[in-house]
Image (cartoon, rainbow, N blue to C red; front, side, top):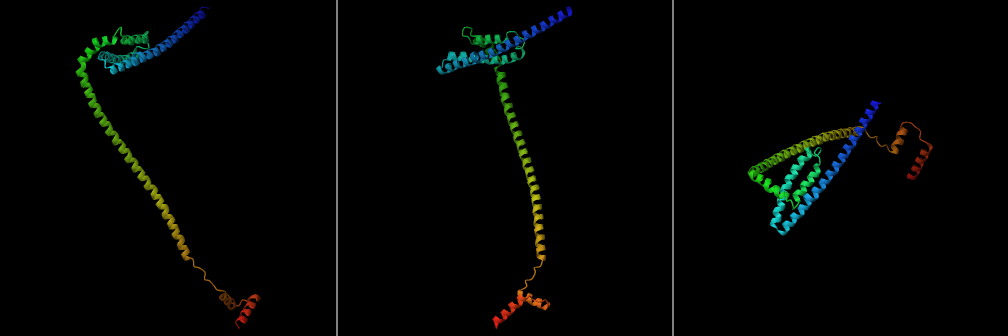
Length: 239
C-alpha cells in the first residue's frame, strides 16, 4: 500500500510540474509577443513619426530630443540582442521589464532617453570618439581592399571556368567532326566502289531484227510460218 501511495504521489508531482512548466512557457511566449508589439509601435513607429514632425517644422529642440532618443535606442537594441540570448529563458519577467524600459525611455515625464544620453552615452562617445573614427577608417580601408581582392578572385575564377568550358566544347566539336568526316569518307568510298563495279559491267549490244533473222537463218533454225508470209508480202510490195 505504501509503494502504491508513493508512486501515485510521484506521478501527481510530475504531472503538476509538467502543467506548471507548460503554463510558464505559454506565458513566456505571450510576454515575448507583447514586448515585440510594444517595442515596434511605441519604440519605433511613434518616435519615427515625431522625428518626421520635428524635421518638417524645423524645431531644433524637438530635433535634438529625438536624435538623443534614437542614439540611446540604438544602444538599447544592441544590449537587447545580447540579453535575449542569455537572460530571456531564465530571468523572471524579462519581457515585461523590456516593455517598462522602452516606455521609460519614451515617456516625456521620465525623459529616460535624455537622462541616459547626457549622463552615460555622450561622455563615453566623447572619450572614444577618436578611437571609433580610426576603427571606422580602418574598416573602410580594409573593406575596400577586401572587396577589390574578392572581385579580382571572382573575375579570375569566372575567366578560368569560361576558358575551360570553351576548350571542352572545342574538343567535343573536333571529336564529333572527326566522326562525321570518317563517316563521309566511308560513304564516299562505298559510292566509288559502286561506280567502279558499274563501269566494269559491259552493256549488251543491241541486235536489230533483220540481223537477228539473218543469224537465225545462218544458224540453221527454221523461221515460223508467220514470219515467212511477212517476208513474202514485203518482197511483193517492193516489186
